[in-house]
Image 1 (cartoon, rainbow, N blue to C red):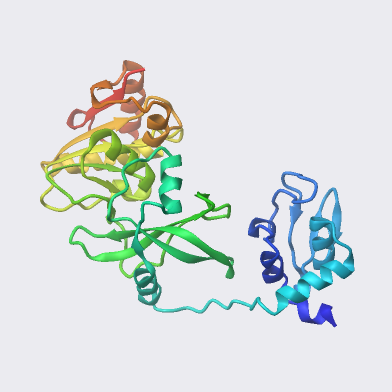
Image 2: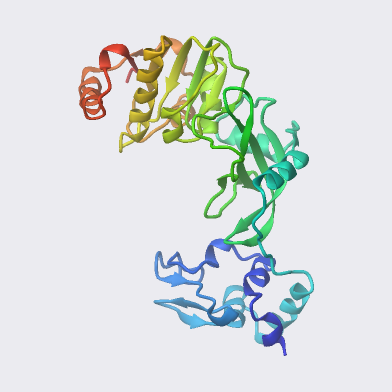
Length: 337
């Protein structure tokens, strides 16, 4: 019977029919049928593809397909039979992380001028695409289930000695960020990544650093400096830079939570104590990073970057007091309003 053939395989079947994997998770999410914001979940009881919604009710995998595509049972069964011969249950096994990294390295290639990734980055307001970034067609896994192969931006994370630690991946689909729970992933590292970074351009004495890869690329467009990406705020604060570096411009995020600012000034304080000149630069609008700001004003130049306003300085001084950072050792700059 077809019900026996489909049991335990509904996620693969539904993905094969084009259903977004976000609708196939056992947690509250927007309903694909009625549009409710948080009353639907795909509980897949006993492997029967079951779902439940507080408004439009519940059903099994067959009813899911009928409701989603407007098919009768016969049409649904026919389409399922076509899929069953193609989909296989994916079992994710634990492996040495070097195995996965090696596979990515072998799959990676230079980004071609007609690549979907170029269109994606340009649409994000990014013009500079360094040779250090690669592209690959990689599988995306959602809760252990393979949902397809997608154009992926591949970024090597290294330490200050150039030793490879892991890869950062950005999955895209149709020249946009893949619509899934985690379109950006850091692979299991071979070595701890604390202090590591993505070296987008070769390090020189004077460099710029930022959190996200795309933000760092926007900073490159703005400054033409060699730029590094720390990937996140926590790692920005912990960056361990090569001895050649003598001057660092830190392009921090202007977070509402002050997480980005704290990380930027923590790094600046630590660099200054090592004898490295450090300057923190923040976009003027709370809740924005430099990519947000630069996209809004493509005519921005370094000449527009000036000393911060007094109100911002006062708020930042309070933050420094909380985290025991000496404001006298750090230059504070912000774009003029």
